[in-house]
Each structure stands twice: as structure tokens, then as C-alpha cells.
Length: 245
Image (cartoon, rainbow, N blue to C red; front, side, top):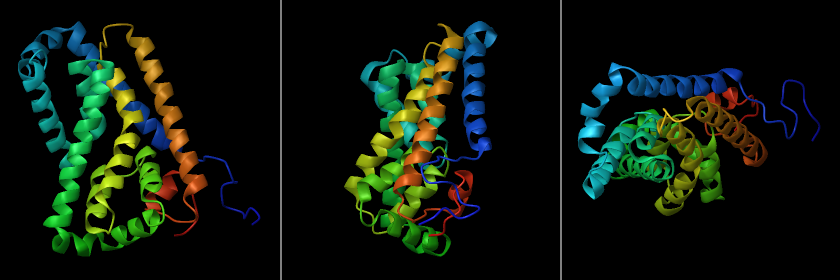
């Protein structure tokens, strides 16, 4: 098929610059919060905050409490990037990346099961079309196509979980692909949250580069492997796609 006017060229991972600027803005704002915690009176106050009082240094009990808190907050729609930032702050880079990803995954599971077991009648009218598109998108390759969705730097995490819950998506491949797909951005934001007082500019710069790389990779893979399907018109618009599902 030849290239049609108005459509992105094959292989070009086009993306609305505002999408990437929004993500970078979130990185910088979280970095600023972390810097203020560690370099001003806010830094003293944080020692008495909920994280320091109940999570940091509290061993297994603190870890389980963080997972429960992170799962609850992501299940109701709090951005998982904020949970990743807090995980990095509380546990450090690598443990924070793992625990932040697990918290988001448990939140995903809670929302999925709510939609599947209790919310289908309530959600069908609002998300029926979205769930149908989700079904078509993942039908042939549920693991790989769910992974594509999770790697995108755009879209609503909680709406995806709800749509999956009222669709025919199988839980195991959906969760497995979600876990892997959550890892890149969790690493980025855990990096910002971990030890912000140690080489802060290097951490922020590294996180920004990693965010740009992961976002462009997600957009490229979506463009290459969606096979003409679409999960959301707004996602396609943000990624510079013009094809119809």
C-alpha cells in the first residue's frame, strides 16, 4: 500500500510533542518536590509524613502497607507514575521499581476484577464501545497487544483496566503483559524519587532521556504492530496516527 497524504510514513514513530512535554513536566515537578523535601524545611517535615512514619524502615510490614496503599490509589485512578516516585523515595531505585510495578499491577487486578465481577452492568453503557475495541485489539495476540498498550506514554490506565474487565480478555496474559509494560515508566519515576539529593541533575536528565526513549519505543511498536486496529481515537491522535479501527 502506498503512503497516503495526511498519514504518517511507515516506520515513523510520530507523536504529539505535547504528550512528551507533559510527561517531562511530570518528571520535573516530582523532582522539584523531592528536592524541596531534602533541601528545605519540607525536608524535615517529610520525616513525619505517612511514608516515613509507616513505610520507610518498617520492613515487611511497611512493604505490604505500601503495596496495599499503592494498589488502592492506582485502582481508583491515581497516576501510577506518582506511586512509582513514592516507591523510589521509600525503597530506592531497584526495589522501588519492583514494588512500584507490583503496586500498579495489584491496582490493575482490583479494577479488572471489580469490572468483571460487579461492574459490568454499570459500565457497559459507558465503556461498551471501548471494551469492544479492546476486544478486537487484543483478540489474536492478547499478551503482545496488551504489552503495546502498557508501553504507550498516553491513555488512561484505569479506563484500560475497566475496559479489559468487561471485555473477554483473559486475566493471566493481561496481567503478565501489564507487569512487563509497567516496568519502563516505573523505573523512570522511581529513579526521580530515589535519592534526589544525590546527583539530582544527573538523575533528572537520565530519567528524562529514559522517558523519551520508552515513549518513542512504545509509539513505534504501536505504529508497527497494531495491524490497522485502534484502542482509542484520542490515543491515535496523540501518537500522530490517522488510521481507523
